Image 1 (cartoon, rainbow, N blue to C red):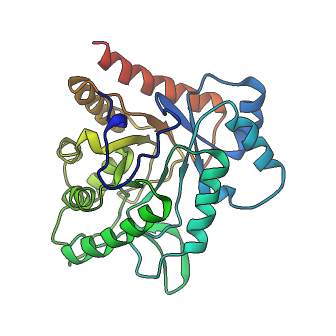
Image 2 (cartoon, rainbow, N blue to C red; image 1 turned 180 degrees about the vertical axis):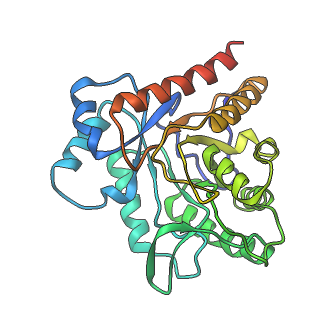
Length: 293
């Protein structure tokens, strides 16, 4: 049975009205006209919610027209789930209104913080993995989930440094967070690989511990290498190493009779839409070949 049908004991499920399945694409402004005119065979699109909070103009009209043809999900970068500043309910209200406007199937954000003492950073900053952080962030996720009235999808981050105060591994922290809050996971396999190389742990062992019934979406993206570090730049094709990890994950899904929606992300140096389609086809072939093996 697909993990999309799993039940949360604390929150109603966000996918009740629209089924998200197959391999979707991150919808960017550069491709909207092409999507509208060609109506590609893309099963769903993910919107970077923070780019669509302004009112009026051409893009909301284009997006509304696209939404008539395709289901969508919302991906956020501004909740600052791991931050110590008070939750921004003005921002959360805008996200909720956007979700309702486009009937988005679910909302996701990252296990990171993006602001401190009112200053906003243009990056997803890492958190310490310990019991204090676990309880604090669990409370924040509970508040957000109560506000939306449904389970929130939490994405594992890429990171480039770690805290001496961390007493848990990243995956063990995430598993405890899922158990504590009944949130769901947006599993970014590229981020697992990036962090594994930067911090010298096994990406495969990390993935082996992920419960499939907690995962509602998978992200695939490309990275950039600088001075021995991998950066989650979203400006290149999915790497061979990440495709290998995804293939192993697809095999595990097959063994458990599960198919999890996958998304191709590309945010910088954005190529022609056909390039994203080719990446999506490869992901589809990997997942479906494994499920038809």
